[in-house]
Length: 237
Ligand code: AMP
Image 1 (cartoon, protein in one colour):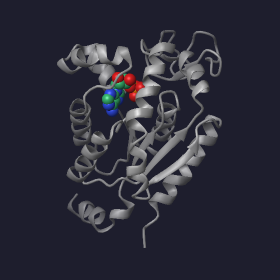
Image 2 (cartoon, helix red, strand yellow):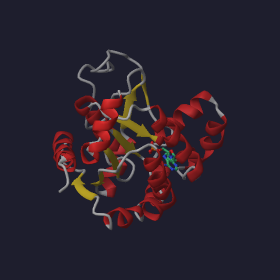
Image 3 (cartoon, protein in one colour):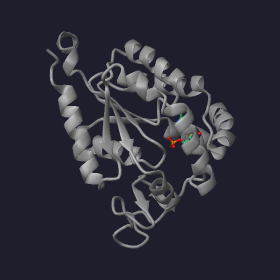
């Protein structure tokens, strides 16, 4: 264990990757995170998933977040940053992490710098999934997921192979998010433009941002992300 710690400390540039997936709701962040989990053994840190779990469990955080989420607005920065702090504390140091839906404001990006330093991690890449807004409304308004394993589907673009049966786990129960309505999606897009997009120049100034065409087929997007991660893994001179 001690020897492992020394090896990691001696090679900071090859440490487990920490990746931010940025992009408006429906850009495919969750889908790509799922592929990174399967293929690279990374862990997804989705503040949206954490908040939905808190709402379902009726915790104080969930009670505070519920109405805000239903309106498509943003939950306070301190609440989501605390969730990320806790989650980072539970993940083994050698495992790569994907931030999905966090940070969403400049204040959260600043908080994340402190959290990464405290948990001895370094940001490897910020990947912006670029998408067309009209297509987003179409994507979001048709999406649903397996209620048991969370596999994602779409009414028009990705139906289960056998109607009503999850391809992955065989469950016949599916769910739709209550905030995936056209009206809430418009608020969520406006929040993204006003509060999240301003994060990009902050990371751009540090040379961390890469852009990927989020309208490309899922596999193509995944390959582009994979290439970026391989580049980020290369030891820096
Ligand atoms: P998502 O699943 O990422 O689309 O998030 C769903 C909802 O959870 C958002 O519309 C927000 O209300 C809330 N939320 C998720 N992540 C954050 C965050 N980083 N900051 C503030 N609110 C968030």
